Length: 123
Image 1: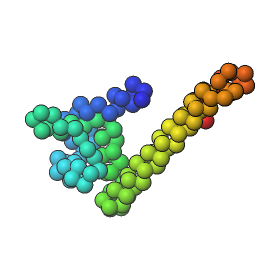
Image 2: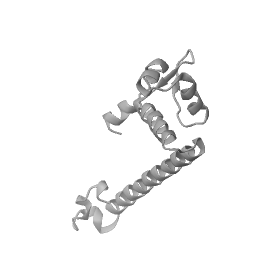
Image 3: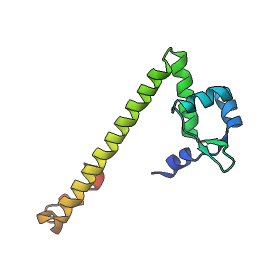
């Protein structure tokens, strides 16, 4: 994961900042959390801390609700997106493993075919 993406996952914003930045009430944010639409981290004192990704998601929820989607519709949409993302990641992992095995085995291991010069992201 790139540093930019790692930083977007850091939970550093307290509820008060999220409330101001998203223009959502505490109750709305807690409601979306209860429905599993957002999962803030908790500190030792059980206070919620949100990441930039969490805020993006809250703003997306807000927009979708304004467009007339129900909470059930939004849950379904997020679930489908997560499934596609998992599938993409597993497909990529399979291609990398296959490439590694091909390069290690047979005539490709000697480097004579030029195939081994292709990087794992080629596939």
